[in-house]
Image 1 (cartoon, rainbow, N blue to C red):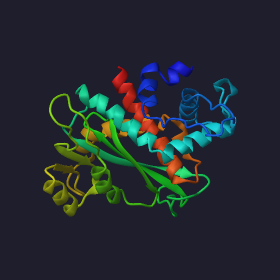
Image 2: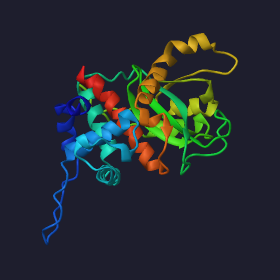
Image 3: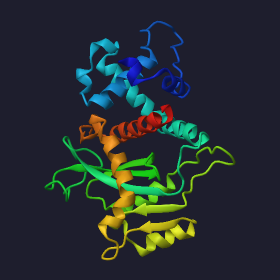
Image 4: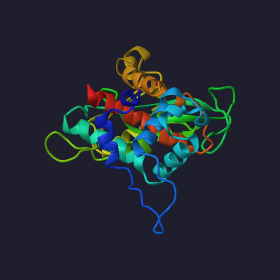
Length: 266
């Protein structure tokens, strides 16, 4: 199961980004748990949705160690760097479709509250919740993800998502970060947003309220909806249990990374 969760190729890429362990100068102490075992345990928690305290003993990692290392790797910026490394591999093979970028969002309930939950959630009976924002390429690969309070308007996350696009390797030529078009549903309808995209050389293809039909919009929107379904396939994300938004965002970034990795491994 460990090899299925974390193949050797994925671990080689991850191992090069993990901060090196620094032993105490005075010596002694407990020998640290292998990084691969901890990483595999974290992927298992994300995939299965189990609580840290229910982490199976077969991984050889205590729940406290897995959670502590997960938090330390967040502080070290491991998860965004791993996501970008996988995107670079995809870009070098020409597997990122820059014909368009597609943006959408989905809400999840936050059982324990915490930062970036917001109340009331207009789509969940005024319960506390968060919203996942995803920007994908034209084929549905998640390039940028983010978290906000559930009562945040979708349009407010559009610019931050586009500005967060990293410079990604290309098969030939320099790195790139700009798609040719931007596609979104009627929740992002804004003349100011269209002008903002045009100033950056991106053609807006944002549905207009009362003009575009839902049938025409669905020709492209199904790709980003499939991407969100892929992400929710990681059961830890279907309900938010983390009070800290940083922890939840780290799980979301790891889910996007693994989704991109599956494309790279095919």
